Length: 144
Image 1 (cartoon, one colour):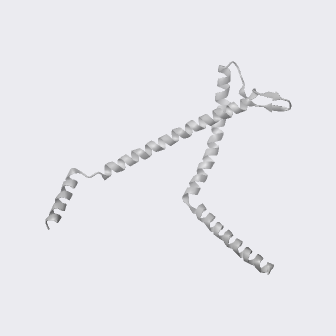
Image 2 (cartoon, rainbow, N blue to C red):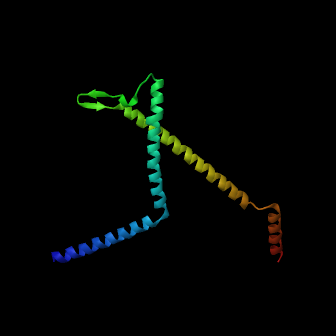
Image 3 (cartoon, rainbow, N blue to C red):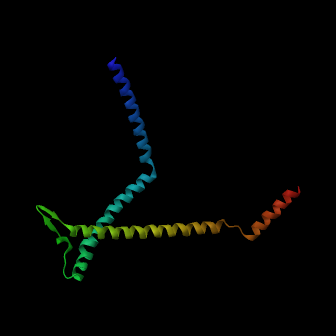
């Protein structure tokens, strides 16, 4: 009896697994997943560029402006633990720059979409002649 119950449970679990596999296959085959993957890869590369910009260009300039301060050396010790708050400051600057770039790109895409939408609306508007002809047609239909 226990073997029979185990077989039934095994079949149910196998059926669930097949359903999940089919759902995953459907999800992967959508175009959005590929777009998302490209975005993640490009975002990772972009993050490296921004990190290099901050660490290799901006922070040294900020350090010079602050009297030769090197942010990566900023830290303090508590017993055996070293708190490297300079690296934290650099990470915050990385985040702010990436956020600014993403914000700028989203605003640009929104403007482009708005412009395309306005162009489509202009094309959809009917001329005065077309409106007049439709009114005449409707009047003629009403008289019949």
